[in-house]
Length: 331
Image (cartoon, rainbow, N blue to C red):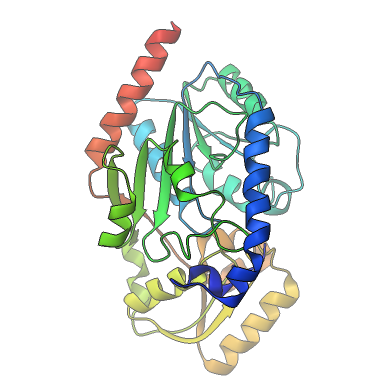
């Protein structure tokens, strides 16, 4: 996946966004037709969907990881279900330690470090496999726009820096669907980062809003004052670069690769050469790190952290009530 075009996130109309608007109308029509002809399928397990309205970079996977940890700590047995984006494996599969990002996708491997994770095109089949394997609830990373899946609770994740971009639907803008259409199916919103008054005004009062932030692990303080060659192949690399700068790192070179890029030996040799010439160290994200050949792992450092919810107790209470009601009803 290539990096999102800059005009998507300008808070004004541009020649490109206006030129592509007719295609956006066709995209919206196609979405409505798909919804109309699709049959929604129900699962015996509670389905918590973590999605977004924009294309990539909102923070769905970090939020999914944190919610998974919360539910496990509360005594539940969640399984993750993902499409396995960017992986070549299309059959319904339980992610194992020997799987590679090329086969099942990088996000699935990250999720599998927390709880059993299923990938495959037919997510409804993954739900059944998860139930047979002992899951009592499902956390679905993405899939909010999939009309064939009934969601018991849908959480929308918004990046406070990007918000909804120019508020236009693809390809004229970054939206997967119109804001109103997406919010009409939303049960709760999580905003990572700053929350502007303009953004708040777009959110209906009946939808709970929880603020969140990405908190860097304490061991990353070693980057303070260090000269760094930072590289990333994620949807919104600027967020990673800014996090390093906030830690006091001195970035001498920023290297941006396509989203979900599988790094090869030539990539790492080139990066090592840059680091050697600039007398800097190589730093990337954990998501990128798992896409690096293992023979080069010792050369690369990672900036790690996790999502922190301002009102974690409220979020857990909402989700626990949902799960208990569904599980008790199913008995």
